[in-house]
Length: 489
Image (tube, one colour):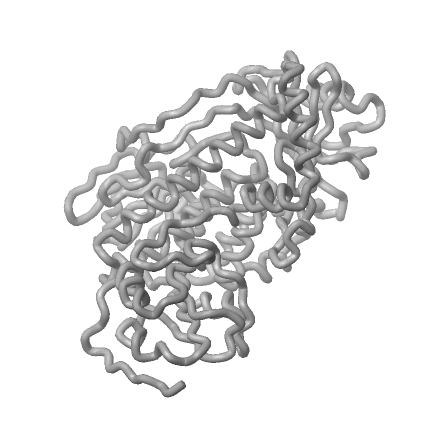
């Protein structure tokens, strides 16, 4: 073997996967076909759940310190979501994808893992023991596992002949990074009676402190083929159709056409090959859900691959990646398609759609609806099935960042290991055989006992009789050489 895991694609999904493997002490090769990192912003924000997991890896503070990343304007179908709907959670941040990629690549390089660039995959073969990948420069990498994080036009997915069902794009719209004049008080999403619309979202500032914005626009007659270049005149015309002379273009930094294609891989696992990010699901980039969902795929998969390489993964642990993340990806596709309809993406001016949007906009002002939509967009609503344990309201959900005395839970998770919260100090003996994989924190926790996986999800809570089955399911067979020590209450 050249390496334990080969990750193909050095976008946010691939680099997040590589970081998880690095944390697990797993030999990793990260390859990308581009000669250098992309300079295009693409996604423009990091959602609450992704921010939480970055904090669980000690990456959030340095990321926010590395640039101007203000609190973002959340929305659902262009309808604003207040950042105050859940004060106990981290509000979304405006972090352009290009800035996130640069930060992650620098972090990986600082820890000895550099992206192998100019490596375009051309052939792939797998057997019972591993995967052989061949690149256009003649190099071959042999690995135990391969993660495909190579985007919506994934070469790995194509070579696998993996099923990718769904809907082809029927409409295009323009996405651009711009500087605008007269845009200081713009609403997130603005439309006209004749179906033209513009969405404007903050992107921080340029090197001279001037505000940058992500712009999306569409409407009647504006759906052009994807290969038609976007011009400054087209941007100006779209702005004028919505704002008249009030808003004007100062600088066009980057623009492309995107479609409403919606597809999802039928299977995320193909033997020793795993699809993640846009290689597994494509959809309209609303709320940066593509990037954030891909990073959540990586957080789910990375620690499981680490466990498999290190030899303690339960038999079906790697299968749980598809079991957990395929429904999460399907839920994203559903909410994006609903948003596209409510936004009247094609500018049809359908009166039925307009009536539905008016009613939905009113409903979206209710606090419970704001919370529901915020959780949906951020990934906080994702709940994984947790067998072998009794019912509990927190099971399968992201663990709150509890203050556990000398450290927060997020800080304890930075080891990449599981954490058992044991407020009454009664579970030391039960968890001792897993002490090489699970850390235990004792008294003082403002909660009942719970077991948290390395990706921050609660996999056990409540009744002690189900703790050992849960430990075995998620952390493998106990170490027979461990000597349990039971501490008195």
